[in-house]
Length: 213
Image (cartoon, rainbow, N blue to C red; front, top):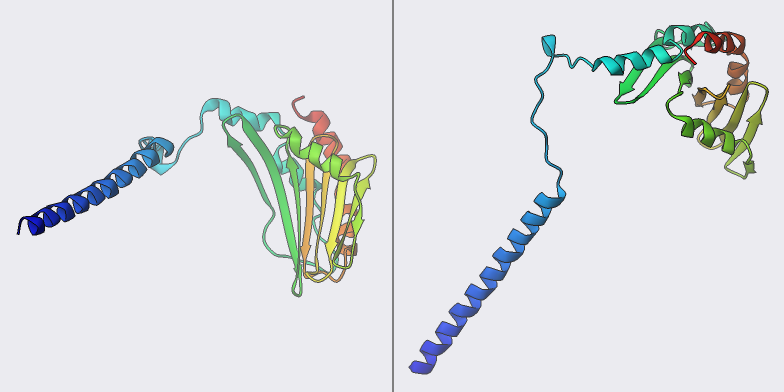
């Protein structure tokens, strides 16, 4: 009888120890999660009519860049055989001490889509450095080609993916701007080059000369 009671007590103790270990492991995981998880700051009081107004120093960043209205003027107004997909779009995006202006136009032709963007990335020189480095490399295989592009205006690369019928041209322009031309459902890369030839590089240079140094 005594042996049975002892065995029963031991069994209960083992269960209690296991339960304690499970609770301890759970608490350790919870505490670790709380330590590693960044604290969520309290919600800020939102501005008038629900808008978050940017800080004054954030808004001034846009004045240091080529206005998107000017960038839009350097984009081709039309492309032969293509229909505008949506109205021209421009923006100035700011976040803390970073900002960029961007202008975009896109077109369709049947199932094909073409998009051209010009961005003033003065605050992101690493982007331009990467594009200049990409101009040094060439690659071609059964699936795609990628070639460096260099001229008096720009440095970057063009690429085309045969099976996907997708192509792109990415360029660092005048050590300040980023031009991106992308197309989908294209029969070949020629349309990308034709679009590039329609970009107003003289206008861009003039706008840069007028911009804040």
